Length: 439
Ligand code: HAM
Image 1: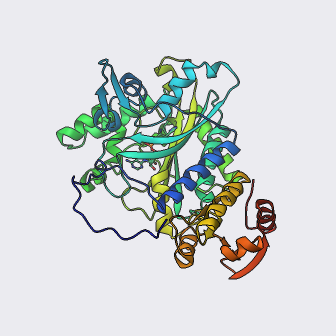
Image 2 (image 1 turned 180 degrees about the horizontal axis):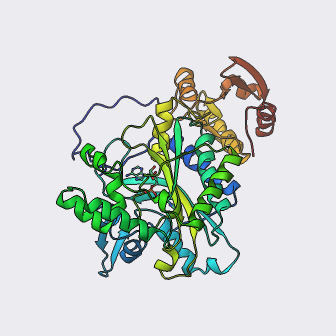
Image 3 (image 1 turned 120 degrees about the vertical axis):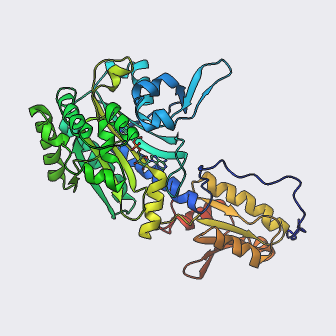
C-alpha cells in the first residue's frame, strides 16, 4: 500500500458524454439535500396514513391520453412516447395520478376501506423546454386519497402539502386555492367563458385553444391577451350550491387548522382531470418556474380509465424545485454535509487492518462509519475525517496497538479520550455521547 500518486494527465480516448438535455444529475453534496427533502415529504405522508406504492415508470400510452386529457400540453406536446419491441405504444409517465388510479382499479383497492390513501415518489418525464427549475426528468412526491368526497379530506391533503414544505424549513411560499366546479356546473361556465372569448379579437391559435380548452386561455402569459381577458367570467361565480358549499367547507377547515392561503380564481392547472378544489404552492424565489407543488380533486378520473365512478384528491410536490427553493432561501438542512459520524484513521498496515474490522463492527451496531484507505499518513487521513464531516475520529497507530488502546478524538471540541481497543468499548463510549445515533 502506498499513498496514491498524482497520475499524469493523458488525453481520454473517447469524448466525454453529458446527460441528455434537461435531465438533472444529483451528485454529492447536493444529492444529500435531494434525498432528505424527498424522504421528509414521504415521512410526512406516512404520518398522515398514506401507504407507499411503487409503480411502473412507463405505461400504455392510452392511460395518459384518457386520464390526463388529449387537449393538455402534457399529452399533446410533452410525452415521451415510443413503440416497444412488441410494437406497443408506451409512454414514460408524465405524472403520477393516472398510474395510481390504474393500479387501484387493477388491484381492487377501491373495493376495500375508503378512502384508499397512497403515497409515491420518483421520476416523471415531460418534454418541456428546459430552463432553470424546468427539467425533462422531474421528481415528485405525491399522495392520492381515493374514494371519499369529503371537504375535510381536501383540507387534509392541502394541509399535508403545506406541512411538507414547512418541515424542511421553507417559508417563502404561498398557497393558492380555487374551485373548478364539477360536471354539473362547469358546462354552463365553460359556455359563458367561450361566448366571452369568441367575442374577442383573438389570433387563430388562441381561438382554437378557446374551442378545445377555454380555461387555458386565462393562463396565457402574453400581456395583450391578459388585458383582453381581465374581465372574463370566473368559475367561482358559477359554482352550484353543492360546489360552493364544498369549497366553503374546505376553506373553513383550512382556517381552523391555521393553514394560510389566497383564493386565486384564475388558477389554471395543466392537467384536465381536476374538479372542485384545486391548489398550487408558489415560491417567490424561483423566477418563472415558481410552482413547487400542486394538486386537486378529480371526480371523473377513475371512471374515465375504466373503474368505478369514485372521486379522489391528491398532490404532487416538486422535489427538484423544493431543493432550489431551499437554496433560494439560504436554508441548509441539518447534517446534510455529514457523510458519517465516525471516521477511522489507522497509521501503518497492522493498525489499518485492525481498523477495518473495528469499523465493520461499528456499522453492524448501527453507527455510521468510514475509514481512510490507501495507506495515508496521519495528516492525509485526518483530512478524510474532515471531508466526511465526521464528529469523531478513531486513531490507531503501532503504539496504541501495543498498549491495547485506541484514541477517540472529538473533532468539534478538539478533545481526545482513550478507551480499550475493542468494538464493545468503542461503541459504549460513542453511545455515551448523545450526538451519535446508533440503532
Ligand atoms: P403538476 O402541477 O403537473 O401536477 O406537477 C406537480 C409539481 O411537479 C409542480 O408543482 C412542480 O413543482 C413539479 N414539476 C412539474 N413539471 C416540472 C418540470 N418540468 N421540472 C421540474 N419540476 C416540475 C401533477 O403532476 C399532478 N399529478 C398532481 C396531482 C396529484 N394532482 C392530483 N393528484
